[in-house]
Image (cartoon, rainbow, N blue to C red; front, top):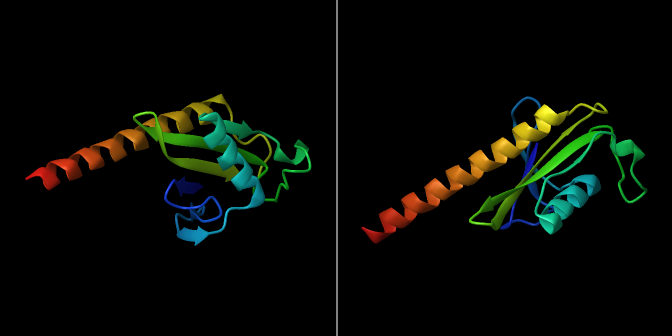
Length: 123
């Protein structure tokens, strides 16, 4: 799973591996394309079998299924969360919905943090 914020370039993201360990690394070409498409379309982008995509998507063994969802605060992009899996057709409609719910949850939590900071700053 990768998280890209508007403060970082898509080439640099925070990745969490399957063991829950954080890594800062460059986005793969495939991740970058999905992140850029999520930003451009302001909506979730996904693929069940990335190996069947055109040549501009250079699918690795780790990215056969991918979901990329924007995180918005007051209709402004705050970041993008991307999750990939090494199996084709790993995600289904429940996985897509869960990512949308998770994106909404993160947006709400970021909003709460910003409001708390504003409240502290005004005291």
